[in-house]
Amino acid sequence: MLLAYGKFDPDLNPIPFSDWSKAYGAVEIDLIQFFQWKPKVSEFFKKWILKNELMIIPRLSIRTQREADEYLELFQIWEESFKDQTLYYSIYSGRKKWEPEYALKELKKLPPEQRYCFEWAQEDRLENSSFLFELHSFSTFVVDPHWHLKQLKKLENIPLRFKLHGWNEERWVRRYGMPLISKISRTIASSELKSLVLSYSGKTEEAVLFKSAGAY
Image 1 (cartoon, rainbow, N blue to C red):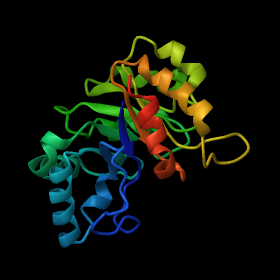
Image 2 (tube, rainbow, N blue to C red):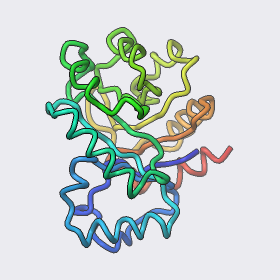
Image 3 (cartoon, helix red, strand yellow):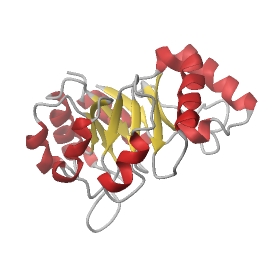
C-alpha cells in the first residue's frame, strides 16, 4: 500500500523536512499554494522529492472561479517539473458536497487532456456525485475508507483512491488505533490502486502502523 502525507506544507514542515517518516511514499500538496512557496523552498522540495523517490498528489479546489487559460498554464508549469512524479491530480469541490450547478462550469475549464480523481467531501455520496462519471476527464473518486464505508459497495467496480480525514460524528479522530487500522487496510487491499492519503492529526505517529498493516 502506498501511503501519502496529507496536506504537506513547508511552513509546518520546514526545510530540510527532517521530521519525515519513511513509511510515506508520496506527499499531497495544494497546487495553488505551491506556486506561492518561496523559490528556495520550491527548489529544495524538488531535489528532496527526486532524492527520496517520492510521488506527489497535487490537490486543487474548484470553488474559486478561474479562467481556462489560468488552469492550462497552472498544469503546464507543474508538469514541466513534476510530470513523472505526479501520482494523480485530486480535484475537490471546496463545498460540503459536490453540486453540479456549481461544479460543472468550472470543471469544464480544466485541461481536457488530463485525468482527474474527484475527492469526496464529508457529505458526498454516489447519488450526488455520479454526474462526474460523464466527464471525459474522470479517472476515479477519492473516498474516505472509514467515513464512506457504507458507500463502497456501490463503488465496487471502480478502482478507488483513498484518504483518511479523521471525520467522526462526535469529534475529530486523532488516532485510529490498530484494530481500525487493520480493518481500513483490509478495505484498501481489495482495491486495485491501493493508495491512501493520511490527513488527520495523528498521521505521523500511525503511518508506520498503516504501512505494516498494508504490506500484503
